[in-house]
Amino acid sequence: MCTSRCTSRCTSGAKGSRRWQKIPQRDDEDSPHAFTVSYVQRARRAAWRLRDVTFLCADAALCGRWVRTLTEQLSALAQRPRRLLVYINPLSGKRHGERIYRHKVAPLFSRANISTSVIVTQHANHARDHLRTEAELQNYDGVVCVGGDGMFSEVMHGLVLRTQRDQGRDHHHPDQDLAQTGLRIGIIPAGSTDCICFATVGANDPVTSSLHIIVGDCQPMDVCSVHHGDAFLRYSVSLLGYGFYGDVLSDSERRRWMGPARYDVSGVKKFLSHRYYEGTVSYLPASDVLGTPRDRAPCRTGCVVCQYNRPLEEEKEGKLKMEESHEGLAWRSVRGKFLAINAVSMSCACPRSPQGLSPAAHLADGTTDLILVRNSSRLAFLRHLLRHTSKDDQFDLGFVEVHRVRRFRFTPRFCQSDSELDLQELLQEKEQKEKEVAGSQARRILGQLCREHPACCRTPPCASCWNCDGEILPHADIQVRYTTLLLLFLPLLLLLAPLLLLLLAHST
Ligand SMILES: Nc1ncnc2c1ncn2[C@@H]1O[C@H](COP(=O)(O)OP(=O)(O)OP(=O)(O)O)[C@@H](O)[C@H]1O
Ligand SMILES: CCCCCCCCCCCCC/C=C/[C@@H](O)[C@H](CO)NC(=O)CCCCC
Ligand SMILES: [Ca+2]
Image 1 (cartoon, rainbow, N blue to C red):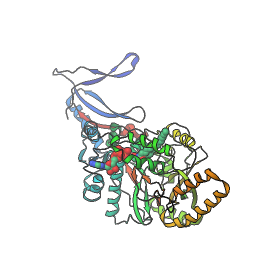
Image 2: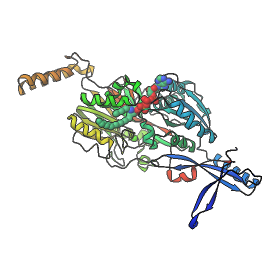
Image 3: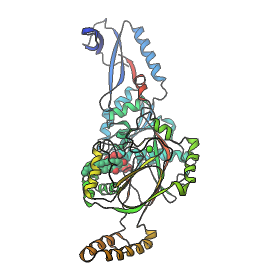
Image 4: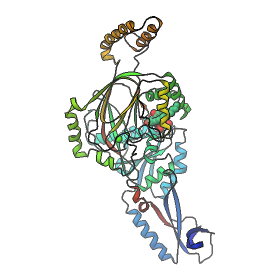
């Protein structure tokens, strides 16, 4: 494949240091035969860049032999994708998805001889439904989503649900282990938060993500299932947030026209309203695992903690069953007033929070970090939030606790079923309060208690909603468990990278 005739040659510079030097284009007959090799150069902060180097040969035969050999070597790398199914969300983030793909991604895919089927989505859940029903997955080596976390979530749901259907698994059953999807997913960041791309690649850069896909590595990623009783709700790979993050998301939905800024406006608004929510969190701690949420040892590709902690397919049944068998013993419960309940299966690092909600959470260890932020003053909560934007430990505060769990459940205090029970408790609390305080303060406190109870308040039940990877869940009473793995186009072992990063060779 002919490319530009501009050629470089290696010239020994001063003191024998070798450096490449561009030499002007040569049109004369005896111009040497040359071939150009494109390779990946790792730049600052996890960014990857494409670089070319051209080699001069004495004669055409030698040049041809080099190109054929290099091309054969590259073709032999089985993990590299040849055919990709691409979904573009035109409305993600600042609505640059299509432009980003056409200008930055497609040229790289074509230089790497990757064929693509591109679908620009026409409506929400277009990608999920296409993957789940009509996509002919056997024709592809992977799926690429161009958009934000919500678009990734659509592709994930489409692939996981399609795999269960094809393998006859019932994903509605909360204890059903899921079949693992075979196709890898690549993410081209074009959204507002892009936390899944940032937390896995370390950068939100379309060129870097494209090169990761072309090089074709493979990195597993935890998937949690969320159920309400026996009804399946959604899968989650990043944040399951109740209280603050749930309120921020639901408030920001009506501001989608603002793009990424919608989260800042809603964030400030919800910080100021400072709502707490009552309920009971029960969780099954992950026993006999390496690492803790506060060991400040971030998960990196080739992570040994993930390999050690992740329940292997065959032992998964046994391991979880064993933990379950001590149901009464191993499960723990926490009841109280929470500003936020966040369950993260990965660090959730993103441009807003470079370390993430749980910096030491592992991408593929089969556990979730459950962060409980109890009711506290606005100032204390602000300190907690601000620590997400620095390297300070956001868990080192009296009203914050974090647990590494395999499963957890949440029941809001004022859920419909037991409001009568709560009503008696509430009346007892009122009588107690009446004894303790008198006059105007009593009315203020009783007003607060009253405002919160559906049985005696005019406002709807004060449950928050769950933010599941950026989507709102229809129920607050949920059960969550680690269920399966996804596969991403990511470097498995960066140390091997120099050998694998030759992208392609072509004669010039
Ligand atoms: N063509 C479309 N028209 C309308 N909505 C769409 C379309 N394609 C996808 N969606 C929906 O748009 C929502 C937002 O998409 P996405 O998450 O990619 O952008 P974002 O919200 O800006 O990014 P982030 O989730 O990272 O904050 C998703 O829930 C997705 O289901
Ligand atoms: C006053 C200073 C406050 C500083 C606060 C910094 C804390 C930022 C933590 C950001 C955590 C993002 C977690 C990612 C969740 C995504 O799956 C989801 C979909 O994209 N995004 C949101 O829910 C959007 C959530 C946006 C929350 C702000
Ligand atoms: Ca995890």
